[in-house]
Length: 408
Image 1 (cartoon, rainbow, N blue to C red):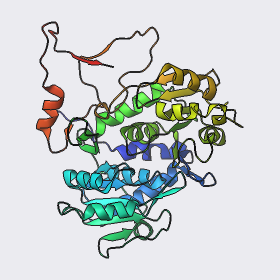
Image 2 (cartoon, helix red, strand yellow; image 1 turned 60 degrees about the vertical axis):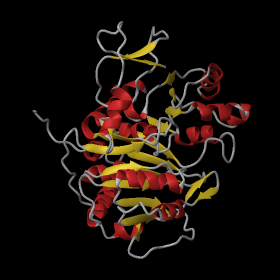
Image 3 (cartoon, one colour; image 1 turned 30 degrees about the vertical axis):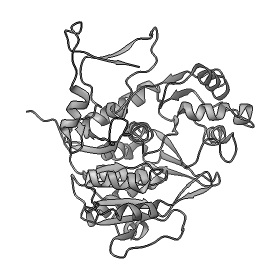
Image 4 (spheres, helix red, strand yellow; image 1 turned 180 degrees about the vertical axis):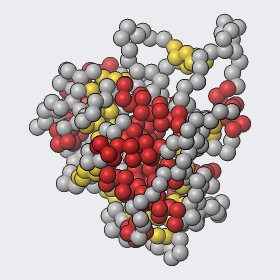
């Protein structure tokens, strides 16, 4: 087999932008409390990622090790993910709303050596006991792989502490160098594991690799959203979902974009919070879910009160089919009847978009005749299940070319 040149996802998302666009904002963080926000440049994000990459190495994490990340929507979650990619560790991000039992199951299945969490999360003015959930998860007798828990101080809330195991994020990074040479990775080296819902059994650890995923996330972000340098882009997804991986973090950063990370919810403390954030940061591209759109739609004009949203150029939808009423309200009220609505369909397993609006397109079936760069390579630790789930197909006589037909 002829192998291509080595690469590193974090280097592509950070290092290659430093010379010409190092001072450009990489991440705008908007806190749950609207008075809390910050702009992080590519230079600053690179520095923080290098420091945490060195921290991971000091903790004995090496290429191929799995690191569980159970964090709120804060910039440090992005730093942790990029630092794992930088050293070749495989990150397994766990949605911050999951229970201790769900956290334990993912740690056990992935054999995670390290857990990165926060004392608490904050959402709609309420505290979420992330560290306590991790403590409870690690009490499971089947959790035997975890050596350390790195804890970010988000709220300063009271938490239990296990000496020798638990370590403060700020103590570790203060001692770490901000110089780090990214690990050389092959295109097919594992990048991350992300567990899907258990609708077909226990949650599946979908594994994506480095090269193809990076290409697909960047390519689809750039062309589907018509990204132009200088655009402010906001994907409202949590990093715990694949949308947060591909279109909040990796796709935008690979293109040198400014991506907005939002800790809160779109209708708190006021129904107009989403529209207020759009105006505050002059967002050009907004990508959200029909669930959020319908929640805002129920508020009527209160959802846009006191805002103009004139900066918006493109609207996007993801997560479920969008009903006509929600589509029309989104286009009319949020987009001022001037923004195209890009309705996207895809899966954790696909890595990126599979269906988006095209001129002249008509309703039909998605037919897959070949592979694509962003597709998952396996289910972690269970390739047999991967083959049975996705490739055990009785081909009908009218499909001589063995094509997949996936009805939307």
